Image (tube, rainbow, N blue to C red; front, side):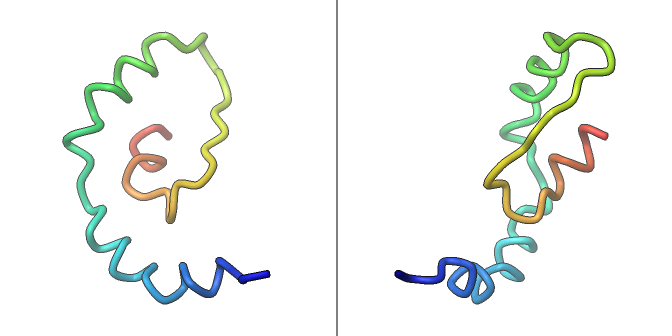
Length: 58
């Protein structure tokens, strides 16, 4: 079995730098957030570092 975490570790820094903006996703995230009930919790899986989208949602 291949350890995928090691593969991600090799590209993580470059990926994080590339994801310094989310202008293409923002309109979808805003719409999604509008549909959530007040004080809802969100589980975000497979999202890399979580930046910038997780920071925006907080």
